[in-house]
Length: 119
Image 1 (cartoon, rainbow, N blue to C red):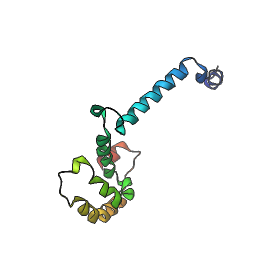
Image 2: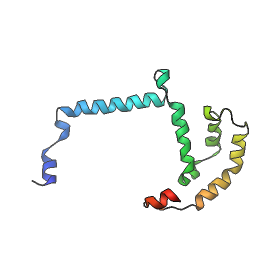
Image 3: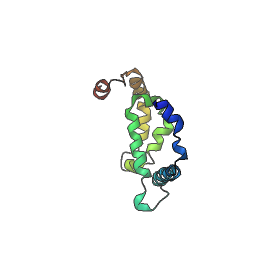
């Protein structure tokens, strides 16, 4: 039999293990969602860390077009910026046009790992 014929005969959704496997996967996603939204016990909450990791998007030039004043202002609410200069958001907003212009001029071949990781 060919692979296509085998796939036509075997329907994994009809296997007895299918629903149990799906339920486990759903449980895993529910668990992650609870941690990322702080809808769990305090020691397991990671909403703040998730927000901080989101800052890495600013290093991707393709994200620059999505950065606006509201995104910059949202940084002020983050704990990791609590002890930085009060005027940080103002300063970043003033530099936003420079960041966006530099990012727009940046090109990289994402299909070439060496080029992408060294540029």
